[in-house]
Length: 248
Image: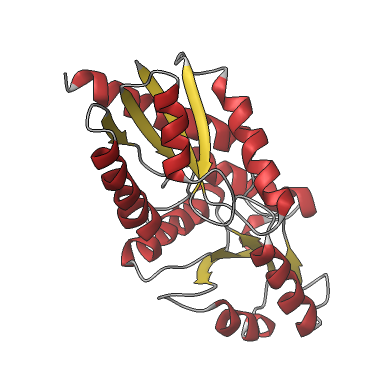
């Protein structure tokens, strides 16, 4: 029997965990799979192994693991597969497949533009965007966010779309923040994050500390769980299920 196990990141902020669960619940009705459970990578329960246990207890013999993650970082490439390897030893009769993160997608570009327009009507040709990624030591994270920035700039003709990261490799947020005063255009900062958590709170404090004028720098809401994100997530789920069926 087929099962889906959604893997969200987790957060120390209860509201962030609640947002992920609510989003997953809105997705379930679009997917024709009887067993659908959720779990978290860290900082929240149930864990991945507990989520797998719940699927198996309901009769699952094939489990497709779907990461609710933005980019292809170590969580998707190392952490989740490592948990699955443990589960394989515990449940040798179960077949596991792993889906892809949301990645680079045109619909997510439209969501980023919406985050700007929610704050203020703008002339893109006189507007700059700074995308803030969580960050990773994995270079594919810089590559993917760079592709997203390029698509955003080309699609909406922004004067400039730059990227930075809270940690890991690539340009740091603090470095970019210190240079925003040099911009001749209004700058909109968009945290490329799914949920409101400690990272977003930290960004707010660091931006406020700089004392920017609202006419100069605007902090937008996170990418969040909007309808475009839902559509892309459903697409990734369907891709995973189709590839599994097609491999038989």
